Amino acid sequence: MSCDPGCHNKLYRDPKNAKIAGVCAGIADYFSWNVDAVRVATIIAAVLFTVATVALYIAAAFWLPKKPKDLYDDKAEEQYWRRYRKSPKDTMADARYRFRKLERKLSRLEAYVTSDRYQLDRELNDLDPKN
Image 1 (tube, rainbow, N blue to C red):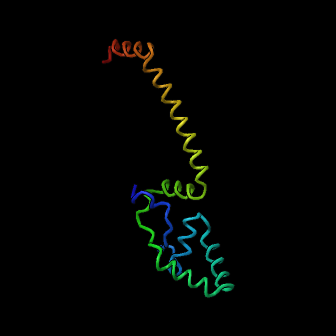
Image 2: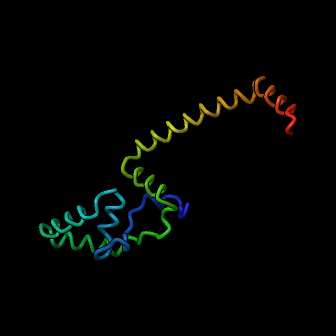
Image 3: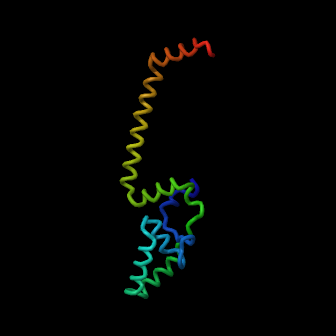
């Protein structure tokens, strides 16, 4: 893991993909939304609620930390956290399914290793003249 526990679930500004301060890019990244849609929504909100929108944007630009450069180790980790933030329940259900699948494989392996067949296979390998 490239950062402290819980860092993947925080809202950051994303200066790398920023147009002004990276607030819209950070919000889009956090919620796995299209950054252009967030920017358009911000512009519409600025037209309708100028003072409040501008004040919130400036506050977010000031108080939100920058997104760490090493937040994700690779693309697979980034995809996992995006999917988790979007739907934690589905992600956990997928994790439980994978663990059950691994548990079944492990129990089959354990049954083989503790069986007479495994011992017989080992003895036959020991008789192999190639050794």
